[in-house]
Length: 132
Image (tube, rainbow, N blue to C red; front, top):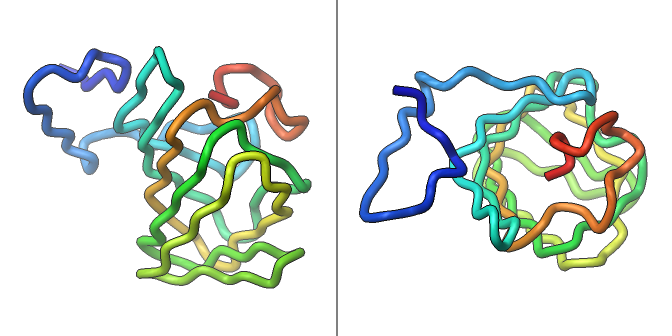
C-alpha cells in the first residue's frame, strides 16, 4: 500500500523512502518525496531533490520556519553566499527574504516546515499544490 503523507499520525508509522517515487514539481529540475503533512497546520517533512543547475530563481519568503539538512550535493544561496554541503543544517526564519538558489551538483536534502510553506503561491510554481 502506498504511504499517504496526509494520513493522520496515529501510533507509529514507517516510511520506506527508497520505495517512493520522486514526484516532479512544476519548477523543472525539482522533485520531492512527501514524508509527512499536517493538513491543519501546513507543517511538512519531505525529501527534496534539485538537479544540478536548477534552483529557486527569485528571492522569496516563507509563511513558517524552514529547516534543511543536506544529505548529498552542493546547494548555494547566491545572494547571501551560503553554500550547503552534506551534513550541513540550514534554518530560515518565517518571513525572511532569501534566495535565489542554485544546485551546484545534484542535491538531496531533508526539509521541514513548522507551518504553511508560503504566504501566497510564488511565481516559480504554476499551481497551488506545488506551493503547499
